[in-house]
Image (cartoon, rainbow, N blue to C red):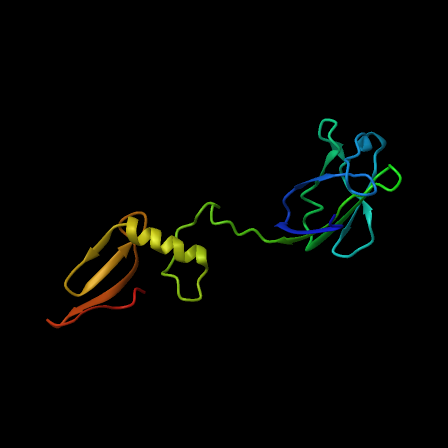
Amino acid sequence: MKDFITMRHPKNTALTLVFPITDADGGNTVTGEAAGSPDRKRSLDGASFADCTNDIAEIDTTGWYTLTLSATEMNNTSVAVKITGLTAGSWTPRFTIYTYEDSSLDDANTELAAIPTTTGTLREMIQFLHGYFRNLRTETSGVESLKKEDAVTELGSRTLADNGTTFTRGEMN
């Protein structure tokens, strides 16, 4: 069996670990470990190990357990977790969790103030594409204009040119 489990998880977001406690050879799960409050410790960013906020709970009587790390515990760059079973020789996994800032694309949007540049965020670029295909655009023989959500305020524009051979669209800015 693998002794160490490494994973990534969003920073400052609670995490429930699900794991078995097995006998010494790793073949059979050991039930009833949660009743005796097995030792559960965590190290935050390499500091000394201290008790986890929450206790371990067994899932029915299966030998599978859960331990929920609080959002506060997960508000660190790394969290190491070790669990010591009560049954002599029992095997428990060790966890190392590396957290990351969750810049979810599903968060509420704020309207773009300007056309994103090539150094803009992925979120801004997706917002621009959405606005380009959804919002009002006007076009004259020389200028294309993209409007904001209100259909009045201009977000950006670009020049248009046609010399009879080549049609050119300038960069939107």
